[in-house]
Length: 291
Image (cartoon, rainbow, N blue to C red; front, side, top):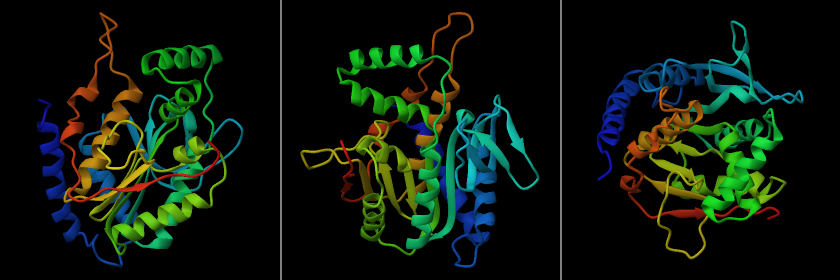
């Protein structure tokens, strides 16, 4: 049996967060983005992220001089340098683990804006020191997964790029309307299907509705023959999907190795993915673009 204690802990934290969010007015229309951001950083992220992770806000830049839009929350590997100011910071793409767009109330225009901010990060290009390392990784991956070079390349960039997330405490959109915004937004993107897929947030939480990227971490059984690129569904627990994905993402990015044996620990074994079940039917979202 998988370890259920982690799931129970996240769900218990959500109950506490929900009550405190109500007191803080985060379910009201007039709440500012800054207040919502401060709450989710102070009450949520710092409760389970390791001390070596920096949490800030600002813009992300790559070595080609490209910059992201202003990002609400940047989860950063503190071993990397950053250009910090009183109002925010400029983060190197190579050190960014994840970014989070935080909203108190989700509306169609806010969801589109959040998606634009996410894709502005995923379109940046982190640089590796040696191309041979990437080549060796792709070769191993094709052997392990019995996949072709395109699928291996897609998985490589899902690992290399920061994971992006959207979190809204409440939403004025139905699940169907949320999915429609995703489809409409995706239809305006240009590029390969793989690149468009990488541009989507890994987990989007809009009140009780979630949209999760089919990136291999959170798995669902879909009734259709073809697996969609994203799943939309309703859940009583808004927090667990976001927290568990970010939990694994940070652990895998930082690396967990025993100093004496040089053996890597498997943190993902603590994540009870098979226990994560939506409360309602799944709505599939298939991305277009060039294959």
